View (cartoon, rainbow, N blue to C red):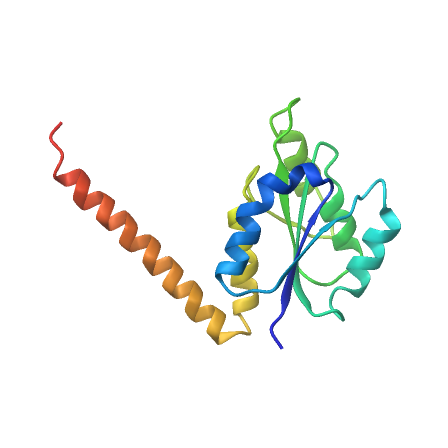
Length: 164
């Protein structure tokens, strides 16, 4: 059975930022479940979801949050699955506050973290994790990276034809 990826947001206001993540997961044919669970407003739901995630067929959790962005850490505390944090840009510190909340985890509770608003990379990283035990997904990732390289080569060729 193919492993799913959970995309958990602390607020529905994070959805626009996370849409590229959801789309990228679907482009790799990875089943995705999208939820709104708050580390602070619904901590029992966060515990319940993370505690049962492995048994419910998930292979990774992507957690997006801004400001006091503790969601990824709270989820990581209750699961052995990899948790990838997506810090959301904020109006006060441009997302630095979110980033620091995710990367400054205590020993024993790791959270992988992508760039501020780095939703697409979170999807790719989770796909790479799942591909360790899914050869079909590994092949899709290989094609994806090859397609990216081709695109850059085409842009380079076009640039070489330009006169400066």
